[in-house]
Length: 482
Image 1 (cartoon, helix red, strand yellow):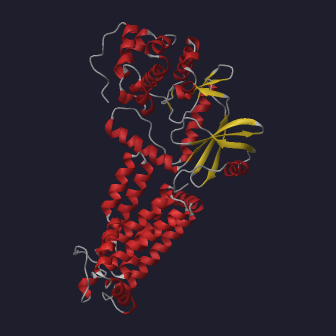
Image 2 (cartoon, rainbow, N blue to C red):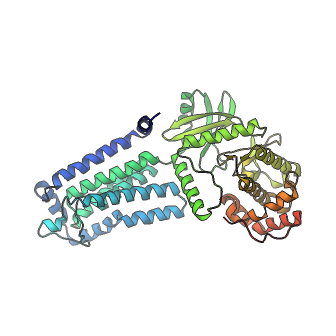
Image 3 (cartoon, rainbow, N blue to C red):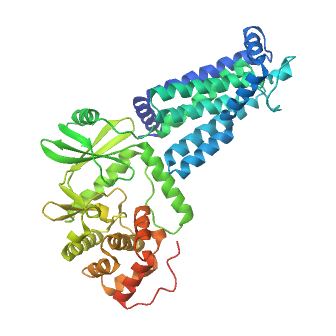
């Protein structure tokens, strides 16, 4: 398939998934062109001047009120909101909001360089200016562009009532730019067009937020793909970057894992940050969309099962809606080890965990999320390895070492470091265990394991001491540089 055919195929997918944003972009272009056509005369007259005079001649106290409102269209507000979202770990939301605002802001600045029309106070007499005068041209309004773009991103996270109030507030920001004398009405129209294009582009290409689908929506999507599903309900399990559900297909239990583009963006942010902070970590590259991510997970799970690793059977992959896809797996009755009473976990079961790890690594597969949360104990006390969402094939030496250290740390949080290390000796030689010492550091571990280990007595130091005692090794002279 050539480049043109590929581009057409991708566009057809976008059009099928989020057609309203294609329409919004066309509307944005119309508003931008309409405002440009009438503003290029360089004059403010007729109906436009009447509207401007009416809004600009309000009492001073009203101008002060609108001056406060106009602040929310400033690009600095977009930066502040994005930073707050990053601190709150709303990575995808933060990136989308920031990108939309920056595209709108720079788009407006670029158009201003075409010198379409000056500011109202440079054209008309007796203009009441309540804001700081700007030397840049007036068309289009940058504040209106930024506010509109942000509203399209934020609105996706609100209900119908919240969206209505948000859009009213955006309209007030546009009105405020006229009230304080900084823009004429057509400047606002042009700014609205720029913001509509910027926000729609981000929603079109990066997707809208992950949402909890209703059971009947999932059942309908699975039915369309040939799966007669029933009794679907949200699953309260450890699930990072996905929406999990339980259900039945042909009266057999299944586990349904739904992923969409918002999870993909979060994955990009997470791995990009780790690549900057820990340049030597062998992280798998992020995926471009949810479908490819789940296909990769299904492939590795199938290879693992074919190699004899006890893991649930993959039933299939299914498109749910928009950018959301579901991976359907065999359902298991039981609980992950981190959810059971640690006193009920026997030494034999701990050794079984390490035999699963050994089987996996012998087939050149690194799980890359080897935690007790991903070891499931069924009703017959059999152990299963689950969730290959972060797994990779043909890992380097560091990949398998990090797998083992992750499992040691996670197991130590559950049964103590001495018992965790003793269980590992059923599979690992003393030399192998000693070689992991330089990797026993928080930066190598997942965030979930790090959080638990820091709460455990002695933390990472206690785990390192247990390994040293079991291998008769001294403390490593240096940790692995990452």
